[in-house]
Structures are given as structure tokens and as C-alpha cells.
Length: 582
Image 1: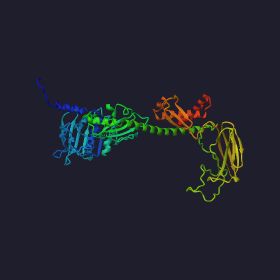
Image 2: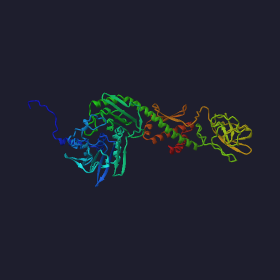
Image 3: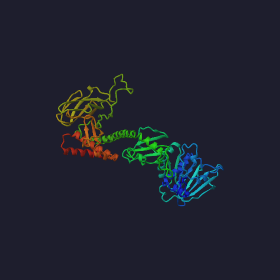
Image 4: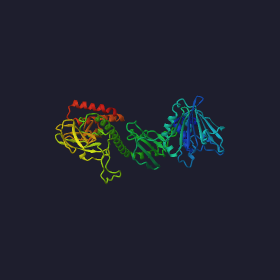
């Protein structure tokens, strides 16, 4: 060849090119999504996807109430243009393409991945139904009028595909279609308000395709990022802890392009590959790869998207850490309530003198007076309902109950503890002391009592431990009594007002799984210990792990001077009583 030659590329074998395009869509669920989107592009407000059995074969139908197929000059659906203009979609010529996705003129060919044949029916301007028939693997098409009108009377377009291929029968079920379309068309359904139903006549179940809702915590990020060609919409969530790894989808104007944005090389890094995030990044200006519609053309639009997302990556990392911290704190509060409830029940089962260093509320042992008067568990105030003090003295009723102060007495060994008993009636109104005689008695423990007639008592014990004292009061006709536990604890031993709380902290310099902060009454759980990470694989496993550390610290607090063997026995004693509630 002595001269240079130039020219334009041409298709050598048109049918071979069409076959390649038709076979490029290999995902049957994606193909159904394409057919559904065609209905939405036609302005449909309702789309019904029907799975049915005919003569032992499975078929799929898509019916919509949209505008139908664009009509020709005779007012008939222009099926001939559709059949003879592959890769030249009429939608590309629309002046207003807002909300319209189709542009390649090949979406209809996706039926090759679903079934053996396709029948497409639409109405003429006079109401006559016309049908386009195509067969998988064949170049011929047929167009003609039909007697039957569109099923369901929806008036838009009706597609009938089948028999379904053997490889797609178990894929195109009602349940799988609902799950796929709710994610694939999430924002498309939300933005257009279209109703998509799946009527599975085979399983006799109906499904409504609703936009997928994310379960995690939404990150505090800008909702839109400006680019030279438009805005990128960002909606990201921190996935719930303990669940499977999640992904962030990439969408084009509400339709999912990639289930995981990390499929793009630019996002093969943290935080997109960490499995912690879920949500959507949507850029309507993206150019999709023809055929599969499951890819992005690597052009300037993709570069704009990458630049925009990279500009917020550091913010995503910070927002993720903030939400993880908040989630951990809330989860810790839930676990703490469960753990404290289990330990509260366990400690109440054990003798008072075993666990001295916590003020554990116990159900009061109230006694009724001999006359059978009801004893009020919570004495009512002598103030009126509106909170004002009564202006006139209240005449007290008969003796019903004795109140002892302080409620949770404790003293150092060798020092005196003063107890005061107050007699009240059934409404909590105090009685005059002269009408009641008192008697104090040591029920358990070693102590000396000094009983006074005015309702007071001095209790002294030289030993560390608990002493139970009972006070009895009587009038001429009524009796009442109350028991109180006095704790004798050395001054240098910290006494806590209740069970400890716990907090998670990375104690990198410590090999211990936990420690106790006496000043704050907190169990510190070491998140830097390998066992902590292991426990996070499941919520129940993590709760039991925290419970075991909590048990260890509670036992060590209460038995600081016991030999190791006794401490171990106490630990087992506590674990046995809490494991069922953890």
C-alpha cells in the first residue's frame, strides 16, 4: 500500500454487533430493573411485575400505566423504529431529559438474559392494541394488531417475557426481585413516587418494592458536594456494630451502578474498604458503560466524582469515629444496666455481711400492726397535693410503721452509731413519742446496744462486719417493728453508694483486662487487651465478657485481704449467680 488511507469505522456484521450487545447483560435481576426503568422513564406511576406459570412454564410480565410507546404519524406505537434503531434511542432526542435514564436503545435486548421471547404491547391513539414480538437469538421481529387490550387496563405498556431460562427460574422470584429492586431503584422510587408491586402467582405472594432504609447512624457530613458538572449527593451511615461488613453504593440519578464504590480503583482504600459504612453516593452526571449499565465510563465526569469524594474523606473518618464513640457509649449504658441488674440480684441472694462495700437497696421487711392495718410502703408526705404545708396540725392515726434513720448506717469499728426510730401512722404522719414505747434488740452480729426511751439507740462494735438491729414500738393497741443493718467498716476503706459503673479505656501499658478506679467507683475495661477485641464479635459475647470483668472487680473490692483460693471461690460464687442473666 503506497498511499495513506483514512475513513470511518463501520459495523461489518450488524447482527453480530446486536448479538454482542444483547448478550452483554448477563444479570437477570439487572435486566428486570432495566425494563422497570423503561416504565419509569415513560412517566408511569405504577408498575406491576408479575411472575406466573403457563402450561408448566414460567413467565415474567411487566405492566405500567405510563405514556406507552411513542406513536408514529399514523398514531400507532412506533415499534418499527424500536426494532430498527438499536443503539439509537428515541429518548436521546427528548428536549427535556430530566428524570429519564434510557439513552442507548439497547435496554429491551436485556430480555435475552431472562427468557426465550418478548412480547411488547402498547395502545394506538385510537385505543387499538399493537404488539412487537422478538425471539432470543434471532434477528427477526414481528409487529401487528392484537384483539386483547392490555391486562389490568393500565393503558401504558405491557411486556411478556418467557418461557424463563432454566438458569433464571430460581433467581427471578418475588422475594429476590423485591430485595434487589428496593436497593437498585432506591432513590428512583423515592424521587418519582412510582409504586412498584411484584405479584408472584407461583408462590401466591405479593410484594411492595419500597426504598431501602439504612439501619446505621447517619454521619454528620454535607449532603451535596459541588462539581463543575453538577452536585454529588452523599448519604453515609455507620453500620450497626456486630453485623456483617457493609458497603457504600454508587448511583446515577437514583439507580445503583455499583453495589460497592470500592470496585473503583480510586476507592480501594480506607474508609471505603473498612466494612463500617453503608449508604449512597449519587452523581447524576456519570456516564455509564453501555450494555451492562453496570460500569462507569472513565472520563472527566468520573474524575470529577473522585475529586469530590476525596475532598471529604478526612471528614468521613472523623465523623465515623464520632459516631463510633457515641454508639459505644450508648451500648455501654445498655450493657451496664444489664450487668448491674444481674449483680444486684446476685448480691441480694448472698448474706449482708459478705458484700459490705456497696449500698444495695433491699426490699423492706415491713410488718403490719397487730390490728391488721395496712402498712404503707412509701409514707405519704404531710404536704398537700399542691405542695403547700398544711395550715393546721394533723391528728395522727394509730401506729402503723417505724421509720429508722439513717437508712444505710455505717461506722468505723469501735465508734458508736446512733439510730433513731420514728413512729408513723398509715399515712406517714408522725406520732407523739410519749404515746409509743420502744425496745431495741440485737438480731445478728457482735455489738453493744444502749437503748434509750426516746426512740434512739447507740450501737458499737469492735469488729469489722455487719450488725442487724430490730426496733419494736407499741402503743396500748398497736405494734410495729423494723430491722436495720449497721455496717462497721474501717475509715480507710472506700465505701461506695452503689454498684460501680464501667468505662472502656485503652490501657496500653497494662496487661490486665480491667482495673478499678475507687475515686470514681468505676471498673475500667481495657480495650487494648486482645480479649476485648475478641469479645466484640457478638453483643451477647461482649456482654458476658464485661460481666466477668465486673465480677472480678466486685469480688476484689469486697475481699481485698482474702487468700487467692477464697477469692477464686467468691468469684465462682458470683459468676454462678449472674451467668443466667447475662
